[in-house]
Image 1 (cartoon, helix red, strand yellow):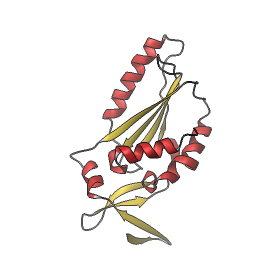
Image 2 (cartoon, one colour):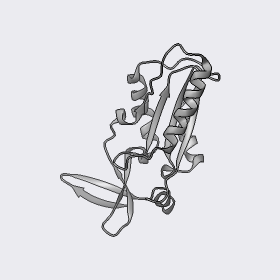
Image 3 (cartoon, helix red, strand yellow):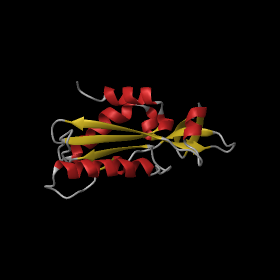
Length: 166
């Protein structure tokens, strides 16, 4: 690991693997979208969700609170940063009181939209979307969008499942 001094604080940079670098380039960018269906409606209180992200999700993997930076010699590293959780929690708004089929369509279109949007490179490469509308399959949905450079599907799904209280 490389170590750099920034002001009075020492920042430790972890080298990005070749896979991470390849998956997060100007030519190629892959994300993993995981949809967690809830059998009960998802609360409107975002403070509960934000505290779970801060206390349970972020500690799982240091890359969840890091950005990829390029060094002087072109090498890429993971740099720890302060995470503004509100930037990562997205809650879409749709009309209320519509039939389930309407929300099925909205969810499908929303998933298509977020899957094509690139991540800002100035913040950690993940988002959590809360779809609070009932669909034919669920009372609400929690959508995780994780950049593939954070890990492979197996390790990321293991990390997400470890957050659940089952």
